[in-house]
Length: 156
Image 1 (tube, rainbow, N blue to C red):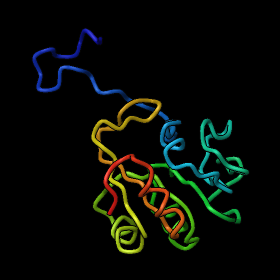
Image 2 (tube, rainbow, N blue to C red; image 1 turned 180 degrees about the vertical axis):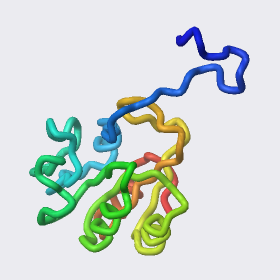
Image 3 (cartoon, helix red, strand yellow; image 1 turned 60 degrees about the vertical axis):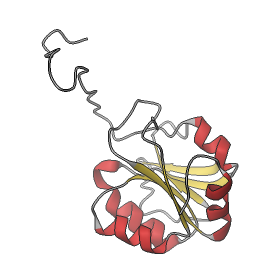
């Protein structure tokens, strides 16, 4: 523990600071979804760690501007999720894991998604908790069904 951090503060544990936009989706999410995706368009440079997918794009391939195909799984860079979520909505087939925020793209997802699953407050990425609510969003009936049957939480 950082000795400069005040133990008597409201939050006695110093929040983690991450210098990367890569928040790895844990294996148990994919195990619960039971989907083999065609594409992960927003992978870390070294490829998908757990995403069961046929192909992927990383920042080296510019997944935002590359051609998307089939059923996608996307966990976008949270520092700039808007263009990724717009592209996801246009593509119309897949599952996205995002922060829940007060944004136009989140409002559009809420209106257009076939299903939404608010992840429990105990949800953690591989790198740790992110301290903001996260959700899985499904576009397409088979993806909505996967959320419904996943057992990861309540689906709307």
